[in-house]
Image 1 (tube, rainbow, N blue to C red):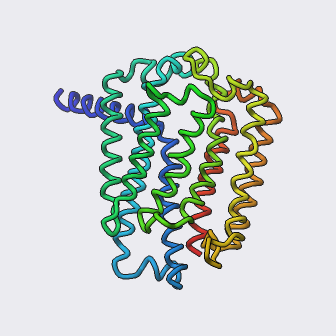
Image 2: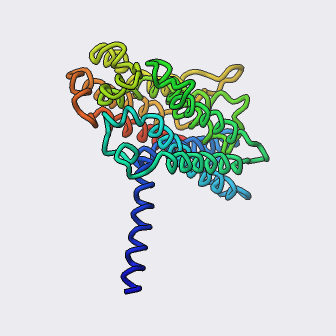
Image 3: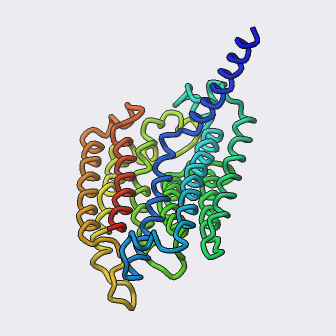
Length: 334
C-alpha cells in the first residue's frame, strides 16, 4: 500500500511539473535560446576576424572556456525570460483566452491566477539573476539589456501600458526585446556592444522582421482580442489590408544581410558585417525567398488566417527566424 501511495504521489508531482512546463509554451522558447547562442557565436567569429585568426583558434585560446559558460548561462536566461513573458501574457490575456483558447491552463482552471503570478515573478527573477552573472570583463551589459527587455514585455502585456491594445505599439514592444535586444544581448556574452555598430545592425534585421511578422499570431485571436479591447493590426485594418501591411516584413529585412556585406563601417574600409561575405549574401537571398513564399501563403487567402488557429505562416515565421539564427552563427564561424 505504501508503494502504491508513493507511486501516486510521484505521478502527481510529475503531472504538476508537466503542467507548469506546458504553461510556459515550450515551443516558443527555442527561438530566443537560439538567438542568444547565435548572437554570441557571431561575436566570437567577429573577434576571430578582427584578431586575424580562425574561429577554432579563437575559441580554443587560453581563457576561452569562460565564454562558453556565459553563452550557456545566457541561453538559459533567454529561454527563462521568454517563459516569464509567456506566463505574464496569459495572466493579462485571461479575458481574451476565455474566448480564443479556453483549453489553456488559466481559463480551464488547471492553474490559479495566484500561482501563475508567483511563477511569473520567479521566472523573471531567475532570468535577471542569470543575466547579472553574464559579465565578461566585469561588464554587466547583458543585464541592462535583459532588464530593458523584461520591462518591455511588461509594457506589452500589463496595465497601465498594455501596448497589446494598439496595433503598432504591440508590434514595436515585441520586436525590440525579442528581435533587436536579444541578438545584442547574445553578443554581449562575449564582446562589448558599446561603440560597435555590428551587433546593433544584426539586431536591427531581426527587429524589422518581427515588426511585421509578429502579427501572424493575431489573426486567429481576433474574436477574443476584440472583446477584450485589443485593437490588433487585423482588427484595426481588416484581414486583407493588414496582410498586405505585414507581407513585406517577411522579405525585406533579410536583404540587409548582403547590404551589410557591401557597406563599410564609418571611418573604416571593413564591412559592417564581418562574417563570411559569400555565405551571408547567399543566406540573405535564401531567407528573402523563404519569406516571399510565406508572404504568398498569407496573401493568396488572407481570410484563412482568421479561420485557422495555427496557420502555416505562423509555423514558417518561427522556422524562418530559427534558420536565420543558425545561418548567422555558421556564417561567423567560417
